[in-house]
Image (cartoon, rainbow over all chains, first blue to last red; front, side):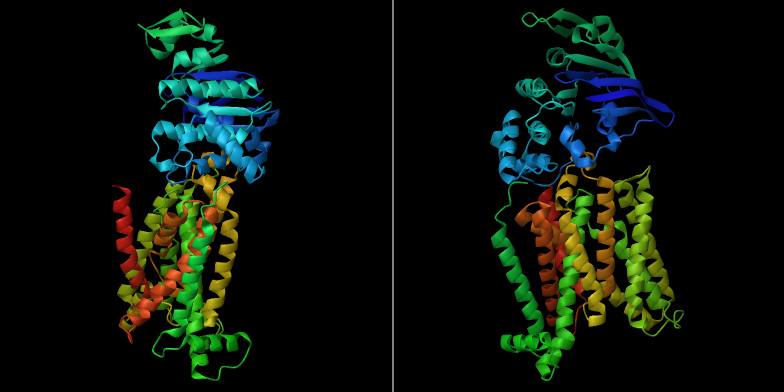
Length: 255
Length: 342
């Protein structure tokens, strides 16, 4: 689906990304972890075509990202950034229907899709509200509904990139949003999610990529990546790693 | 987008407002005309008859070009305001931010003060010279602002904004300098020109402005959805499949063309481009598919009403229309600011 090989990015003399490889495969959620300033958002910028890497290339279905036409790419790849700067009083359903702009599916179909996408993000009750009056977490869910609507109904060949989608959410919605991402990949799509919560990453991601100072420190399954000594050297935080008593995935507990 | 907020009544009332303002502009003045007289004069003019009565002369030679000029200038200023507020993703942005107004003012000032230097131009060009130099000045300064905002193949709107502020200050200083060396009479012309006026509207001034107004009114609504997406952010609009760099270029070009032509035809008229889109947004919401056409109609209508006030308030004296729009627009803008941060 989305394959990046040997991506490096320099800003002045500083190297913000060094030869990073990313392979997003159908049916899988890839979690990207790392401390602040590790290069996570820069990586997402390169994968989404916002930034052009100094070296290496990004292929979407085998074709360089830059060779895609805008709308064609938008139907295959949707991106949710950390914070949106929208400062105009659109109604919530209007914001979500912006996700339908790359399509020509008609008013009727779009209305149903917007409603369904709002439902996935548990934001149906906000549909008629003014976007500017929502809380940060509610706004984040609206943008999630927007990118879901952009790829609706989700299926093989589609890729979703999310930059800290759970940052402002309450515990319930952190889980329901990541469950929605899991359902998206179960239909054949692929997803990359930048996360700070190691336990959410352990639970919802199939593969993890641990970044530090622009370098990949480790990549693999949660069991391979979430190891105490590795986490301690990357994050500088002493942790215990145990097994989730019911689900079996690693559970990271600060000491 | 799926929903279009009950737009029909709004467009109907805006059109009625426009028609009323247009008719009042034709009817009111030192010689008042009845509805019948203005209609008759208009019909006669439309069907190519030579003006014979006093009413037909007044409407045909004085009031009709002035009213059409007002509609065109108001519409184009409001549309440019919408374009700039979209570009800067800020509902309080002004078309003057990219330097076009001050550039046009500088161009005009150069012509007004340096008139003798250009004494030798072709005679057919002379009536157009002031407008032309204002237009060229506006485009030149905007091009410079745009150039300064470019880096690594992308346009940085924040840099453009700062470059616009700096060049506006520079142009202001140069205009001041020109004023310092000008004769008293020239200085008076310069001052009045800077305050804006529809006075002296003629068909030769009207046609270029109307051509630009029609072009901008045709082009910008075609970019309504791209503008909607741009409000989410430049990256977000790109992820929705829009070519953001060419969109920004088009917005800057339309604004430079529109405001340049408006200033060239009627001098500096402030606050229309700032306040009208904001006012219309309160009624129709931020969706550009409605905002653009509604702002064009509202801008034209409101400018005609402001011109009526300018003409009638202290008749037979005539106020510069720029002072009227600023006197009404500035307090309203302050009201919006205070309301916004409460």
